[in-house]
Amino acid sequence: MIRVLGISDSKDLNKVMQEIKVDPYGIKIMVPKATTHLVRINSVSSIAANILKQEMLSLGGDVAVARDVLTGKARKTDCLLMGNLSQFMRLDGKLNKQPFGLSGLAGELACALANYKKSDFRVSLGKYKLDLRKGRTYIMGVLNMTPDSFSADGLYQAPNSELRTPNYVIDYVEGLIKDGADIIDVGGESSRPQAKPVPIKEELARTIPVIKALAKRIRVPISIDTYKPEVARRALDNGAVIVNDITGLKDPGMRRVASGYKAGVIIMHMQGNPRIMQKNPHYDSLIDEIIEYLDKSIERAVEAGIDREKIIIDPGIGFGKTLEHNLEILKRLKELKVLGRPVMVGPSRKSFIGKILNLEPQERIFGTVPACVLAVENGANILRVHDVKQISQALKVTEAILNC
Image (cartoon, rainbow, N blue to C red):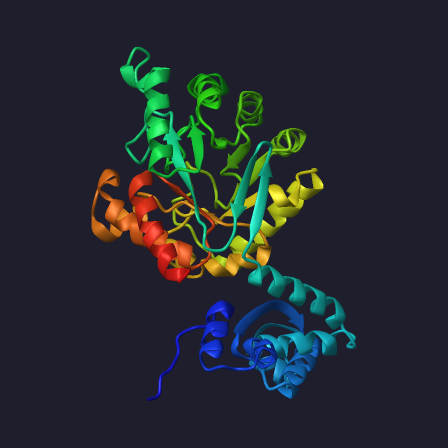
């Protein structure tokens, strides 16, 4: 009997080799040979690209470059490296001996591959610890203290409404935690397309009393979903431990607040702002641009004194993206692992699901489930969702399959 195995994970490769009783030392040598990678490097000089290609060919791999590099007409090119992990490990030693910036490139390549293989993250948030190891996905439950949330689940209504009372909100959140929420994300301003900004005073009134009450009752981390430094500061003063910023910590004031409180931060990618982000969003290279944006945002945060180990990244599903963009992000989510930080994804009830199924937000749970499952398979560490119970059940089955 002949079979073609559809596996590449080192754990699964080890298991197969153990089944056929390969020597342990042989397994150690051969697993890297069976682990293949495609690595893209942008804007390499033509001289360095030609050397890179020759070195990879000598190891049995290859490098795709622009045709004009081979003919001498182009000065720079992007490169696509093709090889197994064993070849990349040996390439590192070869490049370290080369001029034309290739020794520096070797270090960057080694770092990218190490980040890509990293599967365990531990984020310290005061008395809370997020153990984001492989096979364990955290769920962030959404608490929208807004009257105009796109997802139709906002709990903030008229001032005298029962829905606004602290007891109702606490009961609602305790229900989310019982259903499987590991983190609660409190937001007081809608970020749906064309949403209008909410004055700071109003956002504070919507969120701070709730966070203060929740911090006394629940035993999971609280996140504040805001891009305003003052709202973040007040939230952290009253029990929040994470800042979830849709603008990617662009505001220096927000970076100072997060650094001063030693808070965890979620840095999200967004093209434009909520008022204009869905007006013909365009990318020359979607994943490249998202990774570059997040990389720069991480470096700004670290320079401001935020501990790199407290940073979580989010590609921003639905924020300045078309239906096709969102699908591509979910399909290629694993590529974000080169940044070396845990990945959060929020596909829950988003419009791309509505466009596929032609359903209103509150009817999109059966579309949200496969988006979340595929996100986990492709490397997501945290899922931000509205329907916690259903997603929690789906993840238990998903993780049982992936971890068998």
